[in-house]
Each structure stands twice: as C-alpha cells, then as structure tokens.
Length: 209
Length: 159
Image (spheres, rainbow over the protein chains, first blue to last red):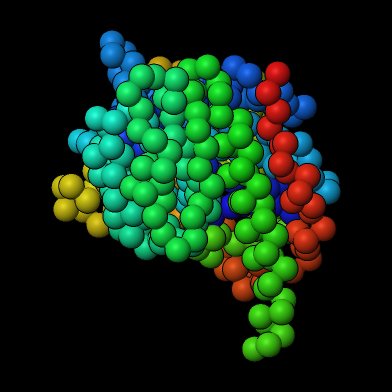
C-alpha cells in the first residue's frame, strides 16, 4: 500500500517489475537509473545479485524522487523480483505492500510458455498475500522486440492480455532504453489515479454509511 | 491499499519522534528508523550523518521479512526481532505490530540487552500512536483530488 505522510508531505509508492528469468527486469531499472532526468533525489540502484553470474538473487531496488505534485513529494520505490523459478519465496516477499506491477514479458517465440507460467505465478503469489491482480494497477511490457524471432503483439496479447478489460501493453527494447520510460510513466499515472480515486471516494462512502 | 498502514499526521510524527528521542537517550543508540510494510521509510530520528536511510530502511524491512520466512521454515510463528552484530556498529530490528518496524543503529559499546529492553517500551508507546492513527479516516485532512494526475504523464523524463 502507498504511504501518505502528511507530516513530511510525501507520497511513497512501490512498483514491482515481475516476469520470467532473463526477460529484462533488471535492465529496465538500470536504464531508468542511467537515463532518468529528475529534479529530486535519484537514489542508488541496489542489486542483490549473484557475484559471478549477475543473476538477481533477492531483488533490485531503485528509489527515485519525482516532481512534487500540489506540494506533495512523490517518491517511487522500484523493485525487481528474481525470475528464476526456484526463488518463489523471495518473489512473494518482494510483492508485499506492492502498489503497482510492471509485468515484463520476453517477446522471443520460445519464451512464451515461460511468460504464461510467470504470469500465473504472479497471480498465485498475490493470492497468497490476499491480494487480487484485478485490484492492482499493472501494465505489460513486451520486451526484446529488437531480437529476431519475436512473437506478434497480437499473439502476446492473446496469451497475457486476454481479459475483459485489457491493460496497457508496451513494446520495448530495454537494452536500448526503448519503451522503458513509456512503461514507467503509464504505471505511475495509473497508480496516482487510483490513489486520487480512493481518497476522494472515502468521505462519500462514510457519508453514505 | 490493504489498510494496514495508518495515515500519519504531523502530530503523529511529532509523537513518534518524541518516543524515539526518549528511546535513543535511554538506550544510548545512534539512530532509529520507522519503516512501514513494503519497506517505506516513515520517519527517522538521531544521527544519520551520510547514511542513505531510505535504502537502509528498505533493505532492513526486506531482510526482516526474509527472517520471518526462515521462522516459518523452522516452525516458529514469527521472529519479533533480529540482531546483526558488527565490528563498530550493530543493527537491531524490532517488529512493532507485524507490519511496521523499528530499525536501530547502535555502537558496539552499547549492549544489545539495553537496546532490546528499551525497544520493548518504545514499541508499546508506538502501538498507542498507531492505534489512534488507524481510527482516523484515511482521507481526513487530505484531498488528493487536488493533485492533477494528467500532469503525471511525463513524471519521469528521459535525459
């Protein structure tokens, strides 16, 4: 859940990048860290990764302070989860308190089953935390569009975005920083809309009661 | 939002800081952080010097959650505190209410027993502040509708 601190006039929000192993979750954070233009504080990118293979063991963490909105400083905590199947307990830990999710899918044809499996795993892990994906803002990112043998967008939509209300999906080549900021800005926008709706609906709900 | 986190006002934070000031004086610790579920840093009190307290809070929170998972694996319901001993400084983490944590940084010359003892008292006082804050409507005194979300389309810009 987002933290609204009236004393320090801060809103803190947690966004988790989820997806199968080697789909580019860490690359997204690296590119945001390298390229973001911020008037606020840009924190260090902390990677708890294997020293030799550079694979994420626990998570990557990037705190970024964005612009003030109506006097409130907006601070975003970006996390990745480890994609490897064996680290499921860790993925659950990182999802704790999540506000928004970016599901990063690998566009290569031979990765489709891993994408579907990871998406199902996301839903299972949220259920274990008594959360429902339908209640959490999320976007899809179809990464690695610059590689040969990628699946058509329509096919990926059919596999991952085939529901009554489709969520925004972005084509990306994270290594080239293409689609990275578009994805981040959309999940940010969806999150802020949700926060605004929740706080503005609360008094009305109380009055109705 | 799952509603486990109280909506802190300026008065709440002042009360929390007063509890922390008393705790640091009695326990002879250097710094105490209050972190919320999800790893957010709510407030800090004491000598942070050049420490990156936001990262410290996030890592401490996730580390504590990992320890709770370890507790589950060995059949313990939970761990309520963890202690990491260093050569110059040590870290003691105390759960407040199952969601929020006190993270204490203290020099090794201060015994962990004193930290643990005074942290219990501080935790009890913090729970009272949290309970009062939870009774308050999350929307009280705050109208986020004043925020213009359309301004957020380019909140993160590429260099």
